[in-house]
Image: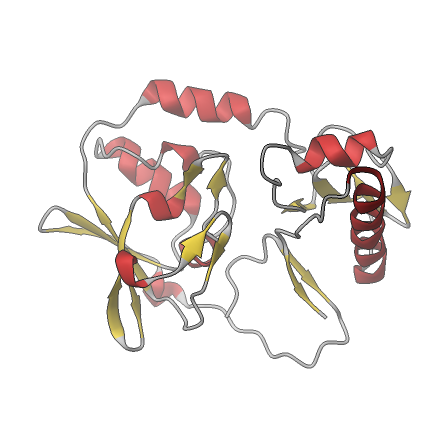
Length: 224
């Protein structure tokens, strides 16, 4: 199961079969001071709902593409703001699973089952100031076809800085390149292929390892 295909790199020769959640999982409901959100719900729709109903904590979803299922699976966010900070529980085929029972970390979870619904505790007080801040923070991100952030930020550093430091900002293989606007964004300038993207990722990992002895860890999900 995939969301909206954000942060994915898929080999066209893969034997894996993909599916998406249908419209029945695109909903937002309030009950007993909790917010129940179907995993086919887009981040934009959820943000709009929280703004309209004065619900706090999800302002960081501004300009963050994707469906809720994908966001939860990878614990998406912006710097220290991440979705699992505010999750109460998720719903899988086995029923509801509390956050405390789920192993998660920066841009990662060990969720293996399909997630159908996410439950948030409702806290009032949507912040227009935070919304403005998050919009500003994302202004340096390219608004062109991309796979999103390519690498996780290593501890006490930034993947974009490292990629730029080894001379790969704007570097191009075929029609794929590391963005001139933000080096950690892998962008497609037209007819970029899986192979082009994979070669760029390998090159960045190799050069950063050689120059800084840092192992870059991919943030995008790769299906070979």
